[in-house]
Image 1 (tube, rainbow, N blue to C red):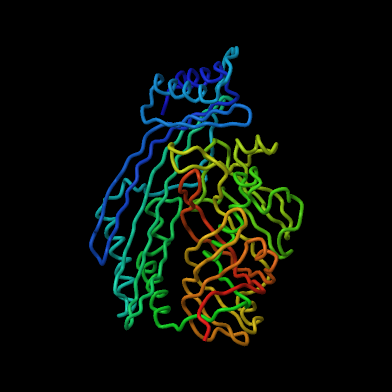
Image 2 (spheres, helix red, strand yellow; image 1 turned 45 degrees about the vertical axis):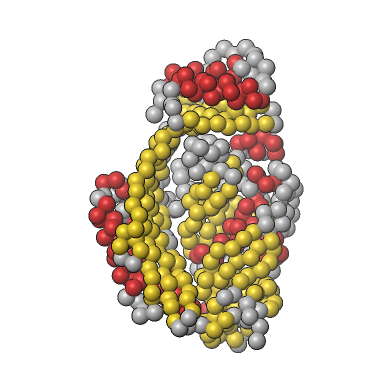
Amino acid sequence: MLKESIIKDVITKGLKMGADFVELFLEDKTSTRLTMVDGKIDTAFSSKNFGAGVRVFSEDQQVYAYTNEVTEKSLCEVVQRLIEALECKPRSFDSLDLRREKINNAHFTLKLPFDVSRSEKVEIMRTAHHGAKEYSELISQVVVNFWDYDQNILIANSEGLVVEDRRIRTRLMVSAVASKDSEQETGFYGPGAAMGIEFFYQNEPYEIGKEAARIADRMVKAEYAPAGRMPVVISNGFGGVIFHEACGHALEATSVAKGASVFAGKIGQRVASEKVSAVDDGTIPNAWGSANIDDEGNRTRRNVLIENGILKSYLVDKFHAKILGVEANGCGRRQSYKFAPTSRMSNTFILPGEYLPEEIISATDYGLYAKKMGGGSVHPATGEFNFAVAEGYIIEKGRIVKPVRGATLIGKGSEVLEKIDMVGNDLARGQGMCGSISGSIPADVGQPTIRVSELTVGGRNK
């Protein structure tokens, strides 16, 4: 993507001008996004991103800039502006030895997105549309979104590293609206993977559409959820979004290093029920949030965050590793060359426990069963959250008795961790996009079925 002689000259310039560390990030990315509304293509576009970002460290400061003019002259000008911003002092520097690292690809692709015609992708979407529309006569609108991309990156830095990687991802998202009398409810399902079009060999588009419609149809017929404090059973898969948002972000060194995390300074301390163990694993083959290397060139890892309730580690990028005096652990991520990397989650989930999901339900005398989670908001410094339940049910005397809608879960992430008293054996993961200061990135969330002994449920009291 760039001659090593140019890489060497650009990085050497930064070091001679006084930088402690210089990094180049090059990206060449093509993507396709299609939107279908009620069976007709509404928007369709392909895009190409090509450019380079330059990052410079000096003591406890970092600065970043980017350009889409990837020439030696332009990159050297960017380096000079960054160094001037840091007010570094020139120093002598002899030579830079570059070492090109080879990586083993763990995420094989059988059918590249750009080897498949747009008409074939539209047919996939149309099949998903039929799956939703044919589920129920109450389905009044179906929106299908298709997204794929092929991203090639090169990372080089003043430690001598030169490494390249290729990331391919495909996702299909279906939103179905059910209407009954004057009421409307929306169901959503959006699986994806670090795969090509072969993703649909395992995930039938018709079934994806059908699942979105099932949620909408079930909820539009339901009565409103009651409010109050009660036990809450949260289903597997995307139920893990609460851990991701309310706890996972607080385990990123971005917030820990600033002291803006409830988990700062608590390594080795109990922060959760002894039944809770959680990991972030960017190595899972073909998982939505996986990659061979992170966006700083470090190999991705399986990082144990919490083990039997004890806080074991944070997610640490290179810059915050320097601030905290620890090792970076493969978690530096960014949306594109237009963003500096920082510590981010990849595939983050609670590990399975000993109970069957049915046992957790039967052990609950009264409470809410949150089968599908929706969106929400989180205060990053405190972990206080408010999440919508996209599909909920009331549990009475150990049985699921009726669907309810409009429920929200309100609480604090660190307190929820302490109140998890049952963990199922049915681990599953769901896909989403995670936003932070380094942009929007693919991330898996996950968990087995869990029970929180007491949680505030927002709803409607009789």
